[in-house]
Length: 296
Image (cartoon, rainbow, N blue to C red; front, side, top):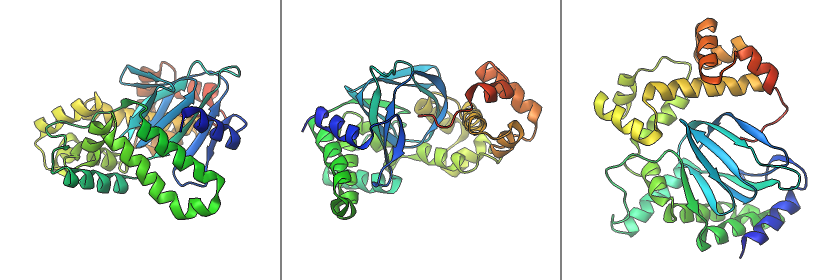
């Protein structure tokens, strides 16, 4: 099975530009035909596979540019900037986004460690924030088998979960497998902290609260968090809040509503921090970015 076959399959199901959900839960297809600069986004745990064109994700100033030779693994929720600066009608960006179910990934990680007698476990390190991995035969075959289900509703209903599990297994066993296993394995304290933060953005969570949540000292937690995300815990929380707010404003919420939704009690403080990070006020951002849909 080849990437050309996967590309043909995606093109059959997505003839126009856009980002669409498929009948496979957690699987989206996308086609982008115009350049989009990198803008604030929040990545959930996902795999992004590109069949043509290239895409860019920026985390704390580090640029990750990838195309059809690599797929992107995001093993935890992260505040990033993402865009498609080279997409065009002549050279569209085409690909698939597969959401990673944490429960499935944890179960598979445990099974892999058990089957390998613990030899595959990645000990002593925090999970990598973003990882690029070369396509291998296993990943290519698993992605093709997964997307082929879109052509047969009965196969999809019966085999969908198993095929998705197969794809997740190939990710765990592939070039980005160490990062994935650290994020979803036994020592996944940082990933669990990020899940906790994502669900408590409106609350004033301190570093001590985060460290206590995973049973670490403040100093160890701070060091491991920065190793995993390239940001301090406080920087991470601020980026998550501002990125979520920027997305809400782009979707049409007022500046005050967006600020309140992500935990800011003061609109003036929100505006100052927003302008410091993005170089323009929230109102200027709103005027420049309100569009019907944007591929993150």
